[in-house]
Length: 164
Image (tube, rainbow, N blue to C red):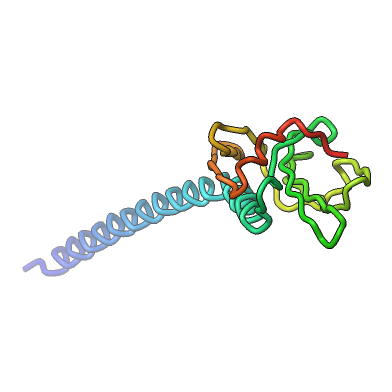
């Protein structure tokens, strides 16, 4: 009789199965970590652009009076301009891209400011505004883009108006 030898073989086989199982679990976990990392990187990449576009869309829809939303030039930068009347005074909100961020600048018409005087809203690779036909504005940030139709589409015709 040789039961001791069979016991060692059984123990060795069990240990081998355990090692194979452990390696399989570790491999699956490593693949999962890689997939998770890729997904978070993709999500992080476009975050500023998506939030930036949502921000611009919201600003247009909240301050959208007939003829008061237009694309202009602000110190050599393309900018979206939203004019608002408060009493007899005209106030202007400028939204533009400067030094890797989307900025907003709110001021009374007639005052002069530089791009660095605005308030940074969120980081973004780029921000561009393009006047399209039929009173539409295409707003692009990075690889993301949205087409917005302000209520007062006639205001788009003032696209050449310069900011002060």
